[in-house]
Amino acid sequence: MANPAFPRPDMPGPQPVAGAKVNSAAVERAPLLRSSSGEFADRTFQSAITACGLAVLGVLVLIVYELVTRSQLSWHAFGFKFFASSEWDPVREQFGALPFIYGTLVSSLVALIIAVPLSIGVAVFTTEMCPKALRGPLSFFVELLAAIPSVIYGLWAFFVLVPLLSGYVQPFLASTFGWTGLFSGPHYGIGMLAAGIILAIMIIPIISSIAREVLMVVPQHQREGVLALGATRWEMIRVGVLRNARAGIVGAIILGLGRALGETMAVTMVIGNRPEISKSLFAPGHTMASVLATEFSEATGDTYLSALVEIGLALFLVTIIVNALAQLMVWTVTRGQPARGNA
Amino acid sequence: MPEIAVSAKTVPPISLRRRMTDRLMTGLAVLTVFLVLAPLIAIFGYLVYRGVGSISWSFLTHMPKPVGEPGGGMANAIVGSVIILAIASIIGVPFGIGAGIYLAEFGRNRLGSVIRFTADVLNGVPSIVIGIVGYAIVVLYQKHFSALAGGVALSIMMVPTICRTTEEMLLLVPQALREAAYGLGIPRWRTTLSIVLRTATSGVITGIMLAFARIAGETAPLLFTTLGNQFWNVRYDQPTAALPLQIYVYANSAYEDWHRQAWAGSFVLIVLIVTSVAAVRYVVRRGSFGGAA
Image 1 (cartoon, each protein chain N blue to C red):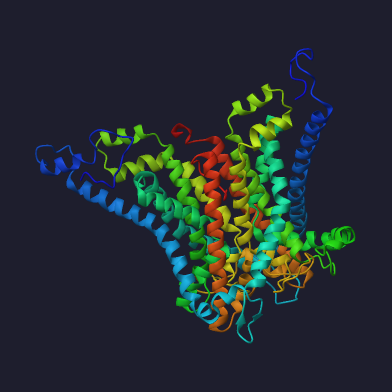
Image 2: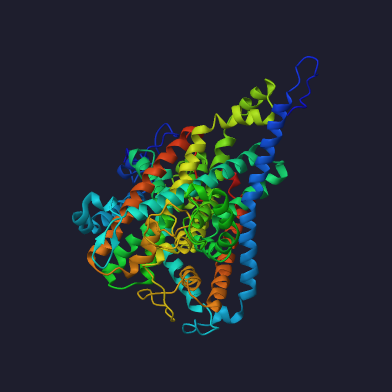
């Protein structure tokens, strides 16, 4: 039973399992050796364990299969026009996903604009400036943010953030930056801006904790070298640390983007859920995830359901591409140490 | 730092502009920390303030009242959440651990790399998409919404996390321990289960609890799998109420009393999750598997 599926690279020499073959031939003369039933148990065990591993693969295949087959109807009806049309009319069965794609992109973009500088700042502070005693509690607090369920973020955003926005922030933005056209229209509070801000709050822990991991693997002698040349601490961080960790930080940002694109509940609760494309960030919108959350269980008609599944498929593909890209970039810096975006 | 112990005679002093930039950037970094901590404290503070004020014995033990009538509680949602999470764990934990064992013990080949990558991909799939799959593979066959469908959807979310942490933890177990077991003639399955997995138990449990904390608050995959229910139900094949779902529905309602209950429900949920995260940190800190590392 010298099984090629039992690679044991750390263990050269005769394999203990291989001994089983000898003992099945010499059972009577060597009663202390394992009987062939051990071999059977081993084989059963390995099959069961391999089945578990294959189940992971199977689940992904199942997801792709279900999404593809159940979106066929809509794909045949609308083709590529589905992603270019902004008409969403369940009554006349006309479906176009453009407003949702727009909403997902814009809300995620707003979130990144807010979250990226803040997360990098926190990561730099915790790795380079922070007193040692503060480091543990600070990262614990930031990780705690990642443990809060999305629906609670949404609840808080709806009852605290939205009134704050409509009462103070939006009037200020409208009077100061109103000329850009990004901040015009009535101050509902609810809308693209609120969604972007709550998304930013949600992805900051992810980006900053991965960025911190990346900064920590920058070799110490890089810092010492730059300091020895007479640099100030900021110059050391800029030249010695950030420049070396560039690819990893970009990876961290993209992982955060992946999370923002697929985020559902918090966004659904504050974005206003209206399939419109509007230049102003004050206006209500809709995202790919939020339209699924609000309309899927009430969708009547096969085309309607199929169109929603197609949006799900598009969302699935985009997040997979974004995540794979991010994993790759983080990996180039940390050299194979797993990047944990979920914990 | 400008005050590096080099005498000013040998090295020209650092210019004012560079020193100012250094101070400014340090200040900005500190500012970002405050800006990030502010919403955290605001969310936690507000949650505790509204949650503690709204929670009561009747909230935990009573059923929801009809629409618009004040009072009542979320007893059915709490029980429903427990049922759904139990179903998810019963399906997800064995598969996750099994896949983790495969990756650690048998997975140093191409299939192993493919499965490893697949697990990472699954981890990034939006939860709402998992909900669609739960709908497609369970609800459409059962012909109605059910706790089982929600449990299946959540178990899909548990597997990748458990799988990857189990793998990491098993790889920490020293090779010598396996060799010693083989040397004693212990079969491979026995070695893996009773020695390797046993040694890494607390690490594996950490992974399970992380996965549990992650799915406990998930709402999106439940929206069109368990659907929610205003009535008492403990059957696995019927629409079932869940705490996160109830929070969502109540938050979207127009009644002040339901808003209050949404906060109370959030508080119960966060206590559940923070307790498990703290327990995880405690176990990791104690490092009972430290001998393996």
